Length: 132
Image (tube, rainbow, N blue to C red; front, side, top):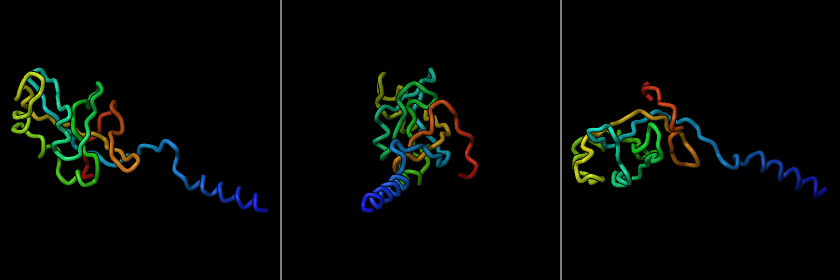
């Protein structure tokens, strides 16, 4: 009898537990911004950390070198208000200060994953925000 109770208890715990790897769940469309040079190349490096806790995708993708929010508190102010032409022209990147002087932003799909945000994927562009 004790064995049956133990099996039933473990079965209930297994059902209630989240999947081992977790899964991405779409949250909302947001702005992701970075700095661009005259050739159209973007750069942001570790500069996202200076704007608070933001992240960037660094692997080659449509969204590489753009900062996006890491948590709920960072959704209060759009990235386009933090990363501007003025800010980009003062940042140091390879090639010297001001070598990537133009702020550029794109709409990205933000997903929740284990209590933080990350891009839903790197290959599919977001749809324009519809009031989020």
